Length: 415
Image (cartoon, rainbow, N blue to C red; front, side):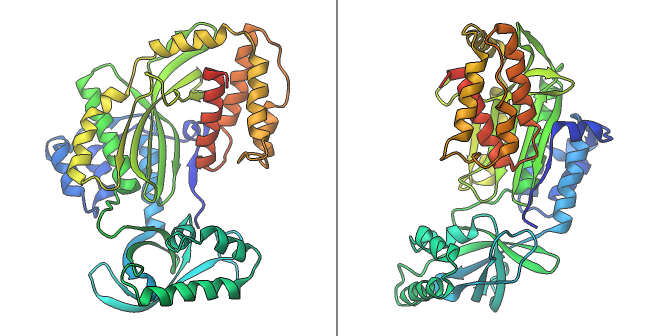
């Protein structure tokens, strides 16, 4: 249930697409969204409703997001710590690895403000950790859980529940974000009650596509394609590639791309970031992320505490995120000058095999970088091919994001 849907570029290319969608059809994704009216005003939807947005594979991603929200119903409740217990369930739950954790809400308020009782929901994503962090006991509790010391685990939870019942400072009310799937409830995240705006995957996709549509109208000649997409009920990552390619000597074609992400449950709700696609051939390539201190790095981050109108106002600056590739090509030429593609390959492999690496048990990733290559300029293309195959692996997109940063740091910074 909690496993994300993902599509790599090859899946998108092989699927049948009209490569366009009418604005009014796009808006059906946010038909019941609390910020629908804000979007309509910000983008003058009543004036452009009959226009078509032409971005390769936009219709496929739109359909996949619509399908996700047909399967998953989102709802939120509010509850105090003193009214919540956590118990283990030994029976397996589809989509949850290990022993499932179940929240018991003895009393809570629904979205209408009505007080209700006795609700059960399983923890997914990092909901369990978020709850335990309120007690500052996540590491200890997780160890008890891993060792199946459930009675001791519950004893500690009950102790803190009783403590909260007698202390206003400890009895915090939080918002619990729920998913309903096949009649079962899941807690996907825990947030502040008052300082939190959940834009959502549907909101993020719609306003991103509207932003690029406006950009193409303002700057005729710009054309875009969605080259990668990963979607779940709470997370979105799409990479939108500028179809204008530029030759980078020895590296093939290079294009400017934008990665658009949202995580309903993270610190940054909505982000646009400039990345570069290198070695583009048949819509395949390697994504390179400029380092954090680079003048080339450009991003727009909208946090959960940003009001809807302010968030939409920020999107007027999206064009500033899409940068020319010229500066980046200069950086690539500097990499080419060291003439040590095998050294770079070995450094990537070392990072992946490190005992603290998230990839130490991911053999499908490590095997891509096992074979040595000759240290000649021409063989830099072989290194890029290894990186391209890594890009196409069907792994969790949080891990893929980490892998991209590892590869980018080593190629650009030789670290």
